[in-house]
Length: 101
Image (tube, rainbow, N blue to C red):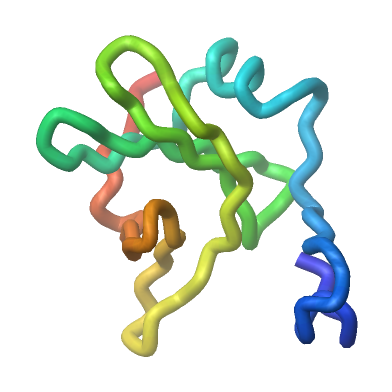
């Protein structure tokens, strides 16, 4: 993420370094996720894009489809664990189940 005074202070929209061709909902339909974080009957799919190290795409899974895909900044806890915030909660990336190619 490119940080400027305006983006840090909330005076302008966030500038994403993660760019893909087309809308996010088509990207998550056409590509397999890098990993899935299970949580009961739902889960979160994580797509890590090679060109950007500090952002990823995450979407809710309610069975056989993906919903509410969005770009997320990868943050780190004090102990060094990588996580994203989705739905008002921290989702740690080391808990994701890796998807076989």
